[in-house]
Image (cartoon, rainbow, N blue to C red; front, side, top):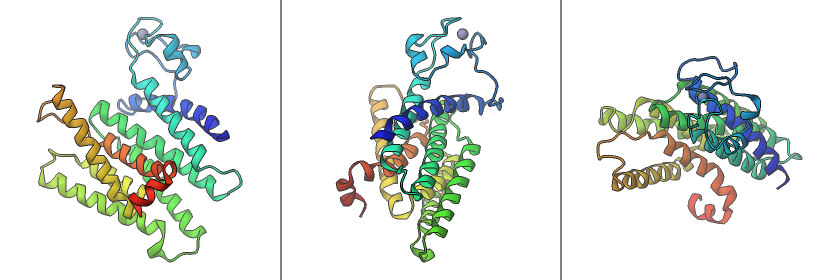
Length: 263
Ligand SMILES: [Zn+2]
C-alpha cells in the first residue's frame, strides 16, 4: 500500500505532461516551452498548472478568458495517477531487483498507450511516434527478461510477445483489407502489433474479446442515445488500449478470477 500514493502523485505529474503531448504532437509543436491557453494564448501561471487541483480551483475555466478547460486534462491526469498507483502497489517491490525493470517498462507503456487512446479520440488518428517509443521499450524489456532468465526461446515471454503481436496485427490487417479501411485503419494494425507484444500470446484472446466487447457495448449505447448513427466512425484505439490495460491489471487485482479466465 505504501507505494500506491507515491506512484499516484508521480502519475498525476506525468498525466499532466501526457495532456501536453496529445495537443502538441498534433501540431508538431515543441514539447518544452510553457503551456498557454489554447484560446486567448495567455501563458498558464505556474499555480494554475498544478495537476487536478488547479482544474478544481479554476472551476474548469481559463483565468484570463473564462474559456472552458477540456475535461481531458483532469480525467487523463486521474487515470494516469491511478494506473501508476496500481503499478506501485502490485508490481513494484523495492527488494526484488527484477521488479524495477518491469515497473519502468509498465510506466512507459501505460503512458504511451494512454496518449495513443486519447489522441485517437481527439484527432481520429494514431500517433505513430508513440507506437514506436512504446514498441522499442517493450522489445527492450522482453529482450532483457529473456537474457536474465535462462529459458528456451519457445517458452519465453519474448517468443509469446512476438507471436502475440503477429497474431493481432495479422488479424487486424485482414479486417482493414477486407473492409477497405472502413472497419478500422492501418494505424490500428500497428497498434495491434504493439498491444499483442505487450500482453503476449495466450492473453491476446481475452484482450481482443474485451476490446471488441466493450467497443460494441459503447457503440450500441451511443446509437441508442442517438449520439451516433449506424455509419458513424468510432475510434478503436481507446478500446484496444482499455482491453490491454485490463489484461495487465486484472490478474493482479483478481487473482482467483484470472485463474478461470486466463489459464
Ligand atoms: Zn484563456
